[in-house]
Length: 332
Image (tube, rainbow, N blue to C red; front, side):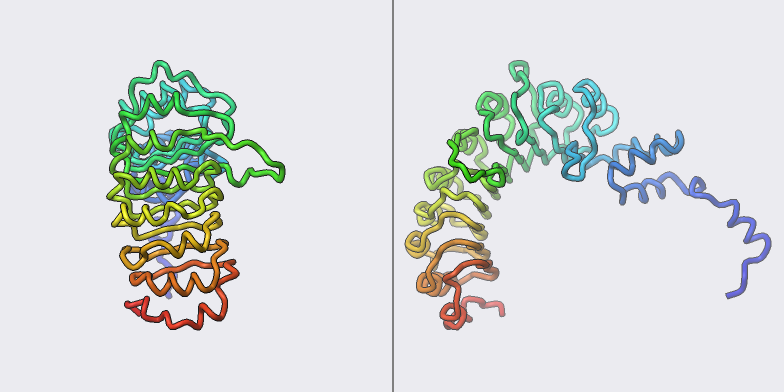
């Protein structure tokens, strides 16, 4: 390749990143994490203005332990940030316990009409804010994720938001299974799941991950009037034994994904389900104590099964893998 001429060389020397158009810089900034964008805002006034563009703040997390940005030091600053930087472009937000309060929810409801996904992290909570003045809440949520606490009872807060969350289609409750100690401890139902279910009638996806108090009574009650349910995850819910599985599959005809890793699922409950009438295509029974005889029986009856995860299942042996089950994968 021929070296550049003198004029071309001079032009390339004089070209800097500031010569790029604002829309080009915004496109570049869009590939960066918010922590990096915040640092770039200190470079110049121009870059500060670009860094504050609401297009860059459609998905925001105030949980630095999960790759989010450090939350504002006060509630007033958080409220100011929501209105000044996020605005109508905001679609997703994660809030730590320090900012789960009435002023923040009021500002989100007023300034962020397109907010559709919210994570509320109560996991480290020792005390809640006062919600007596809470009279507004984002009303177009499609996904609501609540990280539970072992010691905080949340019914007072939930009563305030029940009337705003009937649009939710994906409900996630993240429990505290990973904090279980070797000592026996009393398990409290810190959130009334059945009351919550009655206010979210359009659920398609339910994820109860590591919710220590969840059992078959909850699953049976949830299955009532949950005709749109397509995916249920109850991983690490150790009190679940499967006695509610049969009625769950009978009521939730659209259910196609069932994830039950490391639950207390029994072989008898697993066997007694009318699997041949289900639409199930994805199944996870990792670390469940299921016998090989029951596995052969059940897997031969799930006609639409396309994906199976059965790691650390002692019953999944050569007898199961050698059984004539190839016809259960019609697409292969």
